[in-house]
Amino acid sequence: MSRTLTYYPGCSSQASAVHLDKSLRAILPPLGVQLRDIDDWNCCGASVGHIEAGHLANSALSARNLANAKAAGPEDVVTPCAACYLNTHYVNESIRGSETLKGDLNEALGVVGKSYDGSLHVRHICELLVTDIGMDAVKAQVKKPLTGLKVAGYVGCQTVRPFANTERANKFDSYDDPTFLDDFTQACGAEALPFKMRTHCCGGSVSVMSPDKGLHLIKELLEEAQKLGADVISTPCPLCQTNVEMYQPEINKRFGTGFNIPVVFYSQLMAVAFGLDPVKDAGLDQNIIKSDKLLGR
Amino acid sequence: MNAISPNPSRAYDLNFARYVYENIDGGERLRMCMQCGACSGSCPIGQQMDHGPRKLFMMIRAGMKEAVLTSNTIWNCVSCYNCVVRCPRKVPITYILHDLANLAVREGFDAAKKADNARFAKAFMWSARKYGRTDERLVTGIYYFSFGLLEGMKRGMGNQKIALNMIKTKRMHLGMPHAIKAKDELQNILAKAQEIQDRHGKGA
Image (cartoon, rainbow over all chains, first blue to last red; front, side, top):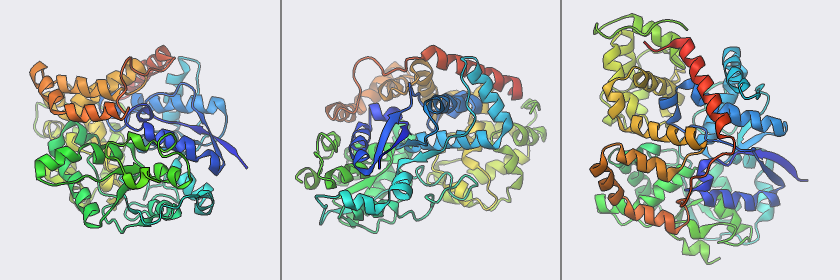
């Protein structure tokens, strides 16, 4: 049975994380999910929009997306990006919880004849995979198990943490020891390493704007992955993937290390395991550090 | 919602605490802070902060407005939410730090013009407002050149290899920025939101 969900790809889907978007669009249809993009979706403001625009204007970015999503139908909104999920889910739940905010945002939307009532559900695609699709369904699609591949599952911060321990939490959130990424790895037939630093921070956008402040965080992650003998690091987060991958040469230069560890999205692993094309469907040619062990399958 | 952010001519002004409780996003929970320090202790770059959230919150209570809004603690937050989930009193620390940073921007503090995060946020929102989308290439470029022509070129050159790698893997978009169709619509929504924001709790 196939179901259609509203999809919010996010800005990184057109730049640094095209390979996340590409691989998701390849693996979700076989798992029974069709994606319908939010019409004319805009930026969510990520972690910095609030600083420049303020709470309400930053929330208005998500409000427009939610209004457009609702206009297309009542289906759940799913997004693969940590920042998109954080902002959209936060604004959606805040609208439900505050008549004042709901009024203010609808006043802003009203100038262009739009409105939003707070009735949608915003979910992370990983949560969809865990809760609705389930690992049995994922395993059923595996045609080329990734036997012998050692994977360090790096969850990062914003995918599971912001709502854990709050009234907005869902079953999926776990701020210290999330296991879903290891379940994904194992469902693909690969080996999930006991990567203790799975929820340590990569520095986020601070690593991009001020490498002096953030690169040591990435170095610590890579050290742990190397110690465990990881063939690849797997992550759900667009910024984690980019940060941990693209800075390896710079980290090697600054710290005298010799890292060259591929960093891939969980969805790329699934695409390969599902027997789809490693380049056309998994987008593995778009990783800066190529994984021969994956590309060769 | 209408308290006036006090004038910083006095080093200690207890009205500042009330202003934060009533106007900063999540600020009302700040009353619950019991100064345990779980926030500062769990911050991945807490060592690079001048005060850390725990001390900053005590400074808010003491009414040290200028010291709070010129502190680098509000600019160094990496938005990892470690502190938020660990806080035994459920203070939404990350949200508070972001909104304090926004207050510093609105009130025109010099530190708010110079901080990396403020420059980056400005470049980021420029792209979001103008195109409705983030153009990573333009945001990074504008951020680099916010330090001046020479420094911008230096930073650009320093990251040449990374840029080249991103272009080679088709992860840096070349050509015109991706833009939404209804740019006017988004800009009108944002302008109205800004207007409502100002109407509510106008900074100072």
